[in-house]
Length: 407
Image (cartoon, helix red, strand yellow):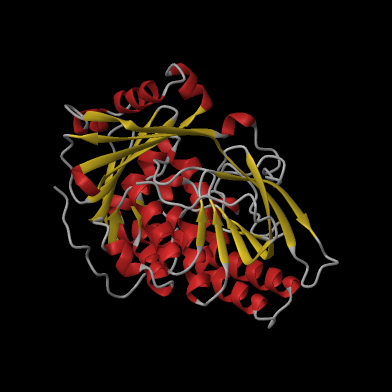
């Protein structure tokens, strides 16, 4: 059943305390937190829910900590995530490194996770409008409190609402014409990527996340709910073109490009309706935690997927933003002060791991360097554990395993 409410075009003067653009993990968790505190929240999502998204579908221990702080841990745990205890990296030349994760991670599809978080926000009092696009933002500084006017479209029906505050959580794609997406200087177009993903049945997996490198990119594989395996691929435009510019072709090329992955996927059955793709994926884009308003998750920056902590960054950015948004709405801080405090907290939380994640991605995509790094990690496990810990945030001292195991 689709999640969401139908907007009312006739009600063109509705004033919300906050409008959050994007009902992914960042937007929905922030909406749930602010609605829980009594604020009138509108959550706008351009897609219908639920739907499949390109994602590693890996919820790390620090992501679970953010869920706990936001009051959403129990609801997500009840969705049936698969516990993951280790990570294994296999290079193109069969070099291999396996290390335990710093706590119990979860494998859970975005199809289930996003819909569950959006439903939690609605249960706490937020209004959710799906299949709705934001087409224009106008700031009225002359109005009391500096309200923002938002023009929305739902099935070609325009409506207009006002908000005391707006937060951007629209993901990596952006809002054409509304938000600037700064790229890093000197980064050529071929340094951007295409992401594809598909769920598979009949794949035997251990309770771990596995990374495989192939010519032109890398793939992540881990179990998710329902006994399925999620295969998510990040590939260069050149590799995608050579694979016929198709999702199935790219998945097949990734599997054939690593013998260990080909062995793992032998006999696997693709669940075609889960196939999806996204482009461009720019892991070099400059961070922008605040444009004219707060940006959360991938809206602020794209963490290289091999770090496996993109959803944690989304949830943690919501955790950082929630108390500041609450303080602003209560009149305790100004918009300028919210900007300063959020940018400072965001930088302290994420800048180091984004930098390190980008360097690791560059090194691991060079075969000879990848072999050296994996050998070093095998001989000196504490070095590997340091890099794993450095690409993520705070980890809870005790993890609660979800109520189901991988099949």
